[in-house]
Length: 119
Image 1: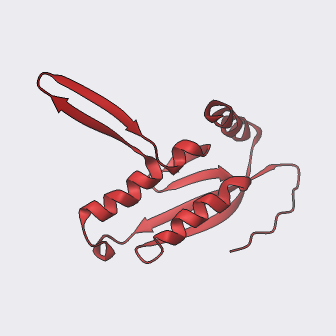
Image 2 (image 1 turned 180 degrees about the horizontal axis):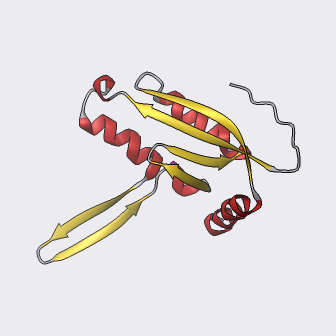
């Protein structure tokens, strides 16, 4: 998919929407692997009376994004290729789409602040 951009004074980003097909996944483990790879997860290890928590990062931990809904988020245009590559790996089990959007100043600032935190 190729998106051509004409900048008209706003900040261009990409809205990504996806829908999973649970029946196409071989198991809950495989479905969870998709979500964990995208969103990351917290691993909890219990030993005797102690509990250890480890944050396991997913793709969106590395990419500044604005979460719109459970399976909808916005990323900067320059990050779209990484997201597209991940979605392509799962294309037989999910439907996804990309939409060009123009962010207002406040939304753009939120995305830039996330980018600064990640770096």
